[in-house]
Image 1 (cartoon, rainbow, N blue to C red):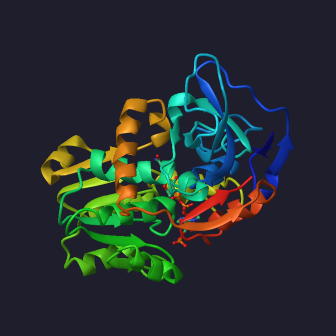
Image 2 (tube, protein in one colour; image 1 turned 45 degrees about the horizontal axis):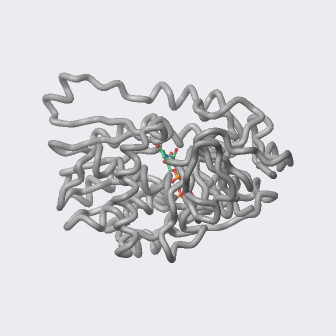
Length: 339
Ligand SMILES: NC(=O)c1ccc[n+]([C@@H]2O[C@H](COP(=O)([O-])OP(=O)(O)OC[C@H]3O[C@@H](n4cnc5c(N)ncnc54)[C@H](OP(=O)(O)O)[C@@H]3O)[C@@H](O)[C@H]2O)c1
């Protein structure tokens, strides 16, 4: 097998494709020949040494892949060899072969391509879980989402469209605004040109929004919280502000950490606000919960309500370019590695 190793924390140059013998599926597992694997912001942070959940270096990361089952471990009756599946894993997906627990290899619907299939699990489960389980999105809600042209951001916009009257505000570089509009974003905001919080206040006549989805962290979490109107919800799900151009910067880390807000239950009560956190990687073992959410997503896919937008595909040998694509903010939608 071939796999993309993060050899040590650093820039994209620390990535290396290494070959080894194919793994054998263990008890309860299936083996998948990978056709596409999702690259997520978390993995770019892992390479920079900024992702505490990552395995120890050298390591192979990757939470999701699509491919074809080619072997079953002891005690496994399916999915049968030859089945096209979407696989969810806690690391190891950036490879051409992957072993996962059988329950985490979900048969792909007919008509779905391998690239689409690899772009669904992380982005769409995260978006669905935040909007519908955690934040109980309601018709007419105003939703602010950052990194709106990224994988999760576009999934959020598409899912918001499935609820009547939801109004979305999305921050992204100006060149990406036409795509945001196509995806249903009512108010794309160029956060590089103006203060996004001032802009949301202006657009809402000072009222603010019902839901803030915050993948940025630090001072941006504080600003988002201040934008909530009564009964508003803030969902924290990332700390992209720790990531910069090169590797880990202790100065950036320290500056961002001191800006992280501390929440007081008495103020939360009096302001009628809710704050929640989401880390899907820590839910990967909750198969009953994820299966139910996945089923909802597949129903939406079947009626054409969600469609992943693929930004770019790279062979494993060009994993460094795939990382650069995200780190240098070039992507609109999902970046994939294709063995
Ligand atoms: N908690 C969870 O379970 C979970 C699951 C999935 C993702 N996440 C989080 O959700 C966020 C989005 O992830 P994703 O995979 O959807 O992102 P992505 O597709 O990799 O999005 C990258 C885009 O985000 C924007 N961006 C903002 N700050 C950036 C920075 N410091 N460095 C580089 N790009 C930056 C850039 O677009 P512009 O040009 O528009 O700025 C860039 O093109 C991340 O914080 C990630 O950690 C959390």
